[in-house]
Image 1 (spheres, one colour):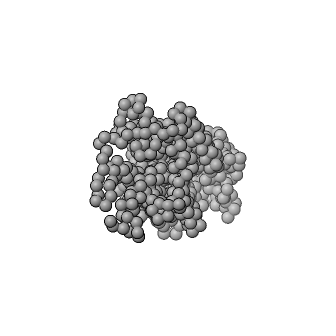
Image 2 (tube, chains in turn purple, yellow):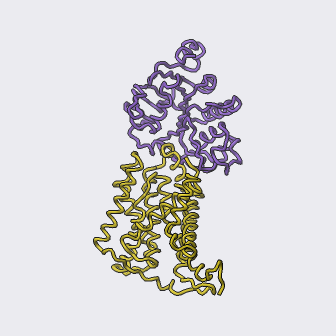
Image 3 (cartoon, one colour):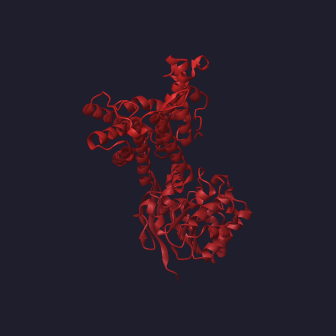
Length: 234
Length: 295
């Protein structure tokens, strides 16, 4: 079994005075795609933000490849190899597609060339001078993922990549995710679309009220659907 | 003699020239203000004081150091920028999380302190700074006489303004600046040191004010209150152009300078009011400013 890259123990986190993470414990191994499932407000996105350093008030421990993420200044987290694709996608409206793509600095060797990125996301090809936010939602999602690939980050926090997208685009992003996995990327995924989560993931954690309350391997998921649906309130 | 609307052409073009000179300084100063406001969300009331400091540093380099205009043009922005960086690091950055009003008061206080300091040391009277030898003399354009130094100021400030605009709008560095203006947290998560960017941006903004001070020294008197009399108009320019709009502040600065000059010809009593009347009209009709996008 591959070594553990991300190790999160008793992670707590706050937005201002509001205590949203209550001791989440989980891990992600090299090359895995692991999802965080749960209802709205369970703390999935907050966990991502706590790891990326966007949420600043945290306690507990979180290490990536042995490096203490909570002690890393926010502008150095990317240098640990952590690339953040936020829920709101974060495409800049004052930047062109190319400027958006080239914005994140290359932080480690092994980043993709623009040609390789266009190979994975052909929709972005030839759109260089378009304003980033003029792209369709699906294309913006692709751009948000693409710009991380350039940086050499090989651990991706992928927050709700399929939210609000048409099925044909979801399929395209799913294919891209599988390709990234094949190339050795490690991914922590927050996803509401269970089908999408199953198509790409190795393991699933269930969150409730800022904690991890259960864990399933992808293979055991069909057998536990009833249990999972109760967690998710479906 | 040629006349336009009953005004001799020489008088008219002379006032347009003065308007362009004033407009060049409006543009340089409002450009720095716009850059600082865009990224730091700070209304930098100390901007006029840094401009005044630029003129004094230039005068000091000449008087005490024997360093002439050209050396000063290179050195003074660095010195003023460094002072700005020091101020941002030690005081201003503590106020970023708070209401605009706090940084406004701090920078206003700094402006008063710097002016008071210079008045205490050098008195309220003005010092004169000679026009550099290589820029003395006039061009005779036939319809008017154009001092070479003034032509240089207009050309140089235009070049600086356009260069600053190009850096912000067309380069990777500018893209980072625009992105950090829009979403500093995400830019930080990408591994960019945003606090350092804020410091350098503030330094660059006040360095532009320092540069304007150097260029102003041979034209206006170098005096402690030279900044405060200018900065109010510059703030009006920024409001008219649209807060945070780079091109807006450049174009508005020059245009208002010329408008002010023209008013002096046709209705001299109103010339000091022109800018503010325009500001009131713009605020009524287009509150986000002529070039502003609104938020």
